[in-house]
Length: 189
Image 1 (cartoon, rainbow, N blue to C red):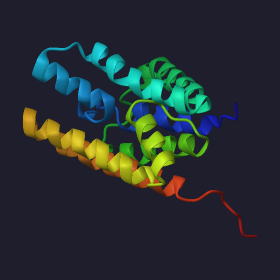
Image 2 (image 1 turned 30 degrees about the vertical axis):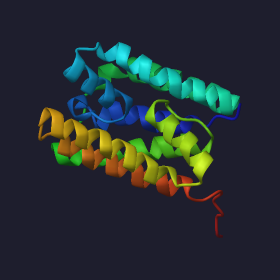
Image 3 (image 1 turned 60 degrees about the horizontal axis):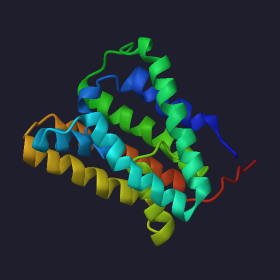
Image 4 (image 1 turned 45 degrees about the vertical axis):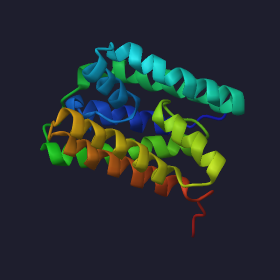
């Protein structure tokens, strides 16, 4: 397995330093599981596992390396987040700035991982697989899926702070889309 650790470090660091207010993290599989909890009373953790199982099984069925790389990415990402949690809240930034910088750094980390055929799992893995099957840019797919989740949450729950999640989703999608839109980097001297 060829792994570039930079993506995991950047993805992890956004949680610890820039986007420490996880109350606005309401997109992706986590966002869907929160909606299931709100609507049906499901436990959020169980919802996350139940939603991820078919995504990971699809990766396993269609390309084992995507499955194994994403399990590795998921494990490293969340271990790093937990290990560095004591550093949470070092910066005290305005919510808008946190959402924007968080989105850009999440997108940087995810984009680097995606360039190496791995991701932290969940919706990122689903968008990755769909991108491989359809040749649609993954940034566009992430924007479409995650924005839909946030907007549905906004309609159902009515929490106006979800607007900040849209800012973050935009940053993630644009950055990851740019990083995955070219195959290699040629340095000019």
